[in-house]
Every structure is written in structure tokens, then in C-alpha cells.
Image (cartoon, rainbow, N blue to C red):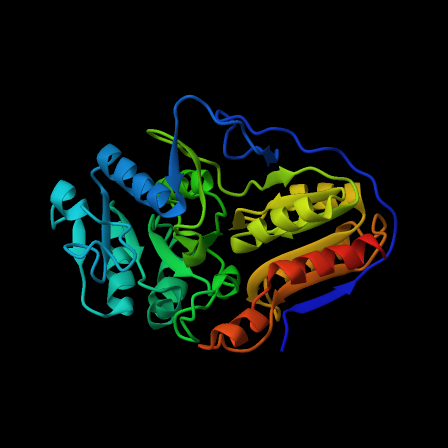
Length: 362
């Protein structure tokens, strides 16, 4: 069983180039961000440290922000994101909870309704299934039902690649995309992890924050010190090109970047960053410019992000396409414990290069 690649479409290419998003751009602006140059105020951080820094910064800035989850206090969390937090903020703002995800989310909903800004940590994204009812049927619908804001964040350590097996390796973002009222974020870089988490905490809506475990210590880069907030719903042009667009998010962004560098072709890489709201303008602009699109993600293929993006492109940019819209995803199977089998199921660099090459030669 190998990663899935599928497709559909036909036509020609054209379209405007994306523009740089400045830090002062208001949230409602639909311009697409391009990769920014490091500034003297930037600090080199891992993806994990950037998430931790965002939490610390927001908790220092706003006393209504607090964390809750399993082993996040004295132990510092399963991945040490909240290491040292209980010493700085105390047990009243760093709450160790029982092994009860439904209670964690339910408690957070009640606190958010009363004016707090809770940040829930699921030890693994897979465990959110136990809190699904409170998140999808209560938090997501509260504003529609009663006009009440529910400003909470659920941090979801997701993804495979470490032989965690079927219960610790899932990418559940598509579950939440079908629940109106939830926002869904999936950063690929350290700087984006900090800026998007800060934005998620400040947002008045419940936000699912997907943080790929494989990026925690493998990804490192310049991160703005102090407060750093990025608008939700704006994609980022990682690499400009004119021959092919790779639309990706999370761990797939790094694979796309590496494949583009090694192939040396005119491949544009678009990092979605935010899945809900989705930057449709950026996707369509890039698709119209290059005429060929590969959508890549580590989650399974059926009814996933790739299917939504492919439908968008074929509905609104079909006449600009020169090739079928393709997807590169994990196979529709549980993630195996076996390292060799896991590598077969999840998209690898060679799979990305092969999919790109096939589209370039189409």
C-alpha cells in the first residue's frame, strides 16, 4: 500500500502574482503572505519552542489565558511544551486534569463562556475523539445557538513518522472542517507556529490547532521575539514558480520545498497554514498562474483537505488548467506500528518528487 495520488481537470494557465503580507495587515485582508526575511529581533527556535513561547507570551499578556490538560503541570506535558509553566504561572493557570478529554473540553467551554481563554492540550490529537461531543456539538455551535463567544484553543499534537501506531499518529483535521463554527490551523514553520497560536488564542471562536509532532524538534528557524500574531486564513507563498503549484500544509510543506529544490523546476509551493478559514483566493491565483496543481498532505485521501481544494480549483479555475488536479496523501488505512510499513503508508520525499515530475511532464 503506497501513498495515494489522484486527479481530474484540463485547460490553460495565467494569473496575478501574490503580494507580501505586512505585519500591520488587518485580519480581513485577503492578500497572500510571502516568506519574510529574518529581522534582528528574531530568535532561532525549534517548532516546539515557538509554540511554548507563544503560550508564555499570551499568558503574560492576558491573565484570562490558562492551560489545561493531562500532565501539563509538574511534568511539563508529554512533549514538554509547558515545561516550567507551573513554576511561573501557578497551578491555578496550569491545570493538571484527569484522563478525560470530554471533561477537559467541557470545562474549557464553560470557562470560555464566562470570559476566560482556555488552551486545552490533547496529549495526542487522536484522543480528541473522546472529547468530540463537547467540541463539535457544544463549542462549535454555541455562538449560532445563543450568540455567545467561545474563545478556546485545542492543541492537537498530530501526525506520524515515529512508529506511534494507529492510536497516536492520526491527522484528524478533516473531522473538524465539517463542523461549522470551528477554525482549523496547521502551521509548518516555527515562526508560523508562534504567530498562528497567538492569533488562535486571541480569536473569539474555538480553534483546533494542529501541531505536527514530527516538526517539534526537526524544524528550526527565526521567530520574532515578544508578541507575534499572524492573521488566520492567509496562505503563504513559500517558493514562487510558474510551472506547477504544490498546495500543502503541515509536514507536507517541507517535503514540497525539498522536492522543488531537488527537481530544480519552476515549482511554486503554497503553504495553506489555515484550513478554516481557507485562503481560496491564494489557491485560485496560484492555480491560474501555473495551470498544474498537486495537493499534498499527510492525512488520508478520502474526504480530506485535498478533496476540498481540488473541488475548489475544478469549480472556479477549470479553464486555466493544463493537467488534472492531483493529490498526494497517506493511504486510507490505519497508521502501522512497523517503521517500514509506516513509511509505505505516509508520503515520502520520493513520492513527492515523483508526483511533481509526473505533473511537470504532463
